[in-house]
Image (cartoon, rainbow, N blue to C red; front, side):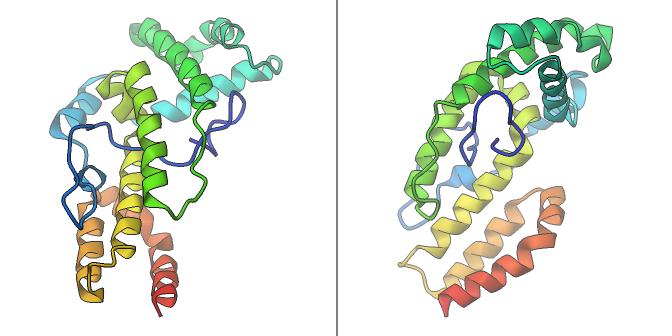
Length: 213
């Protein structure tokens, strides 16, 4: 949320998957942070003409166009400006839904500015607390399918990052057990996200091995 949401309020660092009921097994990472998108989420994304790929980028572009008319931090002003911009980015069939979603996205962005980032980015507990607080905001402003379209890829990578951190800091595991758990976490990522990670996965692994030595 941080890099892509400038202009309304600053954002905190990580996002969590919205399944709030899973329990963490002793000595292992929270299973929420290894789970891919559900079949129901994928079906919604494939069948709903509004919730397609690039939805969040489109909303960010709309916000930037609204801000180009003059800097403002007033949510009501932004929403009024958005209403006149919708036809540039959404077909008539989904225009009203898109406008309502864009309005809630503005409200979400404003509320997100109240979420304090974790003081220690190397502390899994602090990261999880921040992620779960942001999770609650997403549940408050968006339906599950909307949240999946807006944040699904980011949330999967965030879950993966937190899972890796928990595994690496688990003093109850041997180096071999950590290596297997890290590979399991990698395999749990959707194929497209595994491919996106390849550009930086090798330098990251080298840094982790150096730290372990």
